[in-house]
Amino acid sequence: MPINIAIIGASGYTGAELIRILLLHPHAAIKILTGDSSAGKNVEDIYPHLRNRGLPKLTALEKTDFSSIDLAFCCLPHGTTQTVIANLPKHLKIIDLSADFRLADPAVYKEWYGHTHQAVKLQKEAVYGLTEVARAEIKKARLVANPGCYPTSAAVPLVPLLKAKAILPGSIIVDAKSGVTGAGRKVAQNMLFAEIDGGINAYGVGAHRHAPEIDQNLSRAAGKKIIATFTPHLVPMNRGILSTIYVQLAGKYTVTGLRAILLKAYEHEPFVQILPLGLAPSTHQVRGTNNCAVGVFADRAPGRAILVSAIDNLVKGASGQAVQNMNVMFGWPETTGLQLSAVFP
Ligand SMILES: NC(=O)c1ccc[n+]([C@@H]2O[C@H](COP(=O)([O-])OP(=O)(O)OC[C@H]3O[C@@H](n4cnc5c(N)ncnc54)[C@H](OP(=O)(O)O)[C@@H]3O)[C@@H](O)[C@H]2O)c1
Picture 1 (cartoon, rainbow, N blue to C red):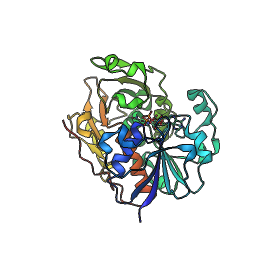
Picture 2: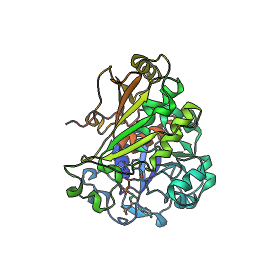
Picture 3: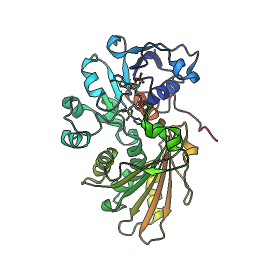
Picture 4: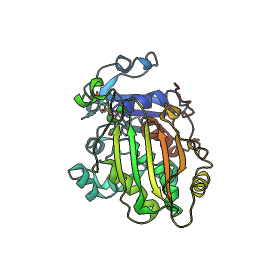
């Protein structure tokens, strides 16, 4: 029997990506799709690639009956899920793609989001859903906080290295580039083609909201507080995140040793690809897939290494990892519905 699924915020980019993936999933029946300004429309009127797939119309959240739903994916702007969630039936399992439940400490949330959390009890209950790290907790969770795209690209290569104490915790620099779908579908002047095409810019320098989430992941792995340097950049492409990460080796560790740790940590992971030494991943090779590809390099500077990680922000960075988490929560093989090949070129 398939489970009944609602996608709240289905008219946005992560919602549409969830639909694309779930249409391939043998245990998923898409029953409810909600929109805000697009409520009342057919999804195919917004996303023609989803034409003739028998999808329900977009409905307004407040007019939607969730009583027959088993699992809701929330794809809402941050700050919205925490207010919406109180009105959802308590039997629902929820995977939230926003940042609302990712930060465990309410004080840190307030500092970075500028307001007191509206659902502190649920914030405490939520399980941070970096699948490769927390699948035992995700399996038992009712509410999963799906990780952010930049934090996923940083955590996959760094968490095993910090757990093994193979790199110095104070040395981490994450220099990341994202495509424009990372900002969602809402209309904004700085996201116009003319503003983006042919250029690249850093933003949120020293102050991006994904920084505390990156710190939280790295600190949990290291067992002590880590503050990483993180600079995101916007590049003229639709999808993809490429993070170039600079680290200092601990003790006698070599780059070959770092790669061996990563190979061991991910040897049974279907979605993490540790590349041969000297090979750098590109966003093209993961586009449309739930994969994270990681390259490991020696730096010219003695005792330093460079890690390069590539994901699709809308898949491993959002909707793909959300489906991976759904598979864990319902006890299905993690790859179910996610055996996607990359779209190349
Ligand atoms: N884009 C990414 O790569 C990415 C990656 C990881 C996480 N995320 C997070 O995932 C969430 C969704 O991102 P997205 O890129 O899909 O955003 P988006 O394209 O802007 O879509 C937002 C969705 O929420 C709906 N919505 C907006 N305000 C609402 C309200 N007050 N009440 C009910 N529905 C409302 C919109 O409906 P209408 O369009 O009909 O108005 C739309 O369906 C965000 O929190 C984002 O930070 C995004």
